[in-house]
Structure formats: C-alpha cells, structure tokens
Length: 469
Ligand code: G6P
Image: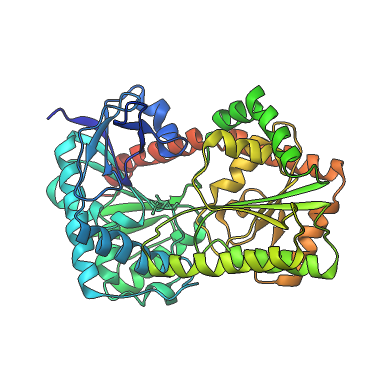
C-alpha cells in the first residue's frame, strides 16, 4: 500500500453514495466540510482519508476524491449500535452538550468504542509514511491519538474536537474518564472550538491524571502536548458563489412566491437533534402567534430538519415531539393553503439550501449547546446581498465570533420572543450593517484559514517539544 505524508482520520469519509441513472451506486464528494478545508493543503501533499462509509460491514474500494485516497474502515452491525449509536452518540454526545438529554452508560459500549478506535488507529498507522502528519477528528475517535502513538511514535499527531468539551463536573461522570483523557493526550496538539473547552480539558488533566497543565500546554511524561482554540468555519467562497448564482437567485424568488409572497420569511435549518433547541423555538413562535404579534398571512416559518441518527432512541422521541408540536401549531393557527409552519424532514441539497438562505428574512439558530453551528455561518456567507437577520443562541460556538447577530438565550422564552420581534422589525440599515460586519469576519476566518492555522500550530509542536526537553 502507498503511504501518505498527511492522513486525516474521521468517523465519516467525505463521501455520499447516490444512485447513478443506470442503477449503480456512485460515490461523490460530500459538499462543504473538511475536504474543502483541507483542499489547499491536499493539493500539494499526498494524502489519505481514513473513515467509515456509514454502511454496515461494507468497505467498498472508493475512488480518490480530489486526489485524496479513501481508506475505508468497516463497522459491523454490532459496532454501529455500540460504538456509533451507543458510546459516541448516546454517551459522549449528550454529556458533551451539557447533558441536555441524560447520557447513557453501558460497559459493553465502551469495549466496542475501544475496538473501533483501535481499528481506526491501525488503519492510520498503515496509511502514514514515516514522520507523517495524522489529524484525528472528533469525539468518536478520542482514543486514536494514544493508540497511534504507541504504534508509531515517529508521527506528528493532531486531534481536533468539533463538539463542546464539558466542564469537569459533567465529564467526571464518565466511568472511563482517565482513559479518554489519556487517549487525547497521545496527540501533539489538541484543538477545541473555544478557549473555555481547552481550559476545561487542562483542569481535568490535572484533576484526573495529576499532570501539570495550563490552558496552553500539558506535560505528559517526557512530552509536551499543546492545546488551544481553533474555531472551525465554512467555505465562504463556495457558498458565496452558489448563493450568487442566477439559478439560486431565481429559485429563492420562486420559493417566496410558493410561500405566498409573505412580508417575512423566518427560516430554521437543523439536524434533528435535541441539542438544537427546536422545541424552544417552536414554543416561542407558537406564543407569538397566539399573542397576535405574528399573523400567519404576513409571516411564514420554514423549519427544515435533516434526519439524523434515526435509530437512537432519544432522536426518535424528539422527532415525535417535534412533529406533534408542528401539527398542533398548524392545526391551531394555519388556514387552508396557509400553514403556520412549513415543516420539511428530509435531506437537502446545497443549492436548495442556498436558495432558502437567500429567501429568508430571518434565520433562527437556537441550539441549547453547540460546538460551533455552521448553519449560522453559512447563512451569513449566503447573504451576498447584505440582507437577512440572524437570530443566534449564545450557546453556539459561533456566537463568540458572530457578535453582531441578534444574540439570544433560548431558555428565556420571553427573551427569545422579544429578539424574534426585534429582528423582524429591524430597519434595513441595522440589518445590513450587522450582516456586513459578520461577513467581514468570515472572509478572514473561513475554513481554509482554520485548517491552515491548525496545521501550522501542529507543525510548530515539534520545535516546541524540542525546546522544552
Ligand atoms: C456533528 C459532529 C460530526 C458529525 C455530524 C453529523 O457535527 O461533530 O462529527 O459527523 O454531527 O452526525 P453523524 O452522526 O451523521 O455523523
């Protein structure tokens, strides 16, 4: 097998399968995301991506994507249940998101998590040439850096957590907390979305492992691990080009027409996830309708919810609750041909999303906790016309950067209602000056800048370790 000088390791490969006109299965690069982030770096470096296709027991030979080799890791039915749906998405995911749903602990899930992490580490070790850089992504693979270092001490290893890292009082619940911290400390650089997360991690390393730690460096045996915040972003240029295209502009116009040419279009786009605050938002909207502050004919709400992790119980329960509430609101406030909420529970393609962003006067993003929230950033990127108001939860990582959004605490129902009304009634000068400022920020903090800053910091860890030892 050919080896690479850069290996990205992520639970998912950057591909989607689709069915070709002749009925065959085709694999395409999934839009946006990490591949675009790494594109400039990958163009000059032979790279491999290690990941899972999302299927069961399947390890198809995939074509290169933009010159990057795809190295598939297969998961069995049991591993999908226990590693992906279990430990990753029913233990770590809720715990890391402020335990807004109760995390579930099962000992056998942990065994599966270890086994799958070992498989990813072995695949990365196989794909990496001597001295290569290996960049491990997210909470599914927290043990990989440590396992990889044990096999391949020659590698430069990075780890980046896309989700929040919780405060000690929550993380301490984890039965295998020491192993998880040690796994991450196998990296030379551990990156987080926000400085607070790096601080939580440093505190936990001292508390659980008794190692000297600051918010920038942690000493582990004879090594120094660097930690820091690297807020992830989006491919601004790609979204701007898409949202500015004539097709998308025409589609946005058509969408407004199909919605009955209302004065205000309010949009929300989320994965179906209990962290996203969908129910809080629906409640606020329903009260505004009941109070008469919003009239169905003048204002239309579009709620897109992309299906996600559908076999996990908490996600099924959430979907039922959301759909019952949407039904109730439409039943109570809708009219024939004029629903109060247009509810779409289906995957969306990028062009249609861009058209929705262009059609929406107000974008409402109200997670109870979110590592970053790239939908908020995408909306800003799409508004090449400088229009559109962004209502954004203080508990999304994006709020630290998009400070000109209409910021809101989604738990404060009255505050949420007031902020929605404020955004709805804002004058065009207020709206556009906020949008211009947010766009300015994203222009210099796009996904390419994110990848560059992380890889540069990872490169520097070699000299840092040399200086300190
Ligand atoms: C979050 C995670 C990603 C994950 C994505 C979609 O953004 O940080 O690692 O890929 O959700 O979830 P899924 O379970 O479909 O991979």
